[in-house]
Length: 243
Image (cartoon, rainbow, N blue to C red; front, side, top):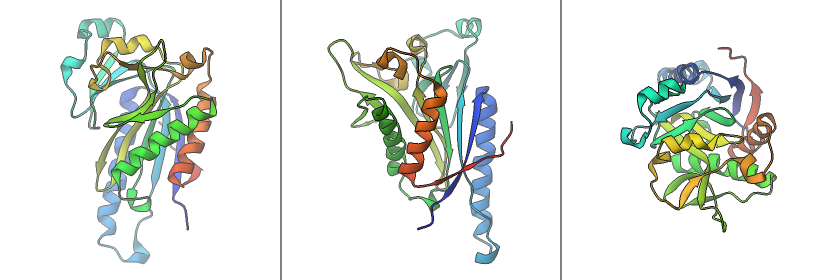
């Protein structure tokens, strides 16, 4: 079986809008390529491209298609004072936070070369995060009916989400992806109702906070990349993308 080839690019620290524009361009190109291929003979068909982007953003709140603006608890004037951006975007889900100390991953995949099952796609992202957490001796899990990866409650902590997942899909091409809290300032989540979940028994977590020590983003990126390639069964190719 020939594995799909995914072009991987670590954008490092990048403005949210720049990363959004880039993945939108890659997404549109992949979708347009599929449409064009339908009118071509097999020997003339354009090659399918898949992209995986890792990055770290400055403070930003993003609101998904099903989100409610009243889940933002901080006034616009206060957001401006604290240099916090805000965008309404086309992924599923509600509101979340991206910022320093968090790995945001964008998957622009044509699922024709993987599997035509969006639930399986989300589960594969979650499983990669769960496998990454296991490398650090942490048991990540799922909660039925909720997306993302969670840590079970302890005597002093409630259920808490450590990795959020939200995607957009058109013609079986995906965009957006996940946000994995490594050394994230969790206080930033107090300005929103994360993912629209109002339960008092649910919160957020970061890897460094759980382990009680600082963890390198670069180290976690390598682990996540490995586990994503394993769960999706793809080959990694270094991308030549430049912003």
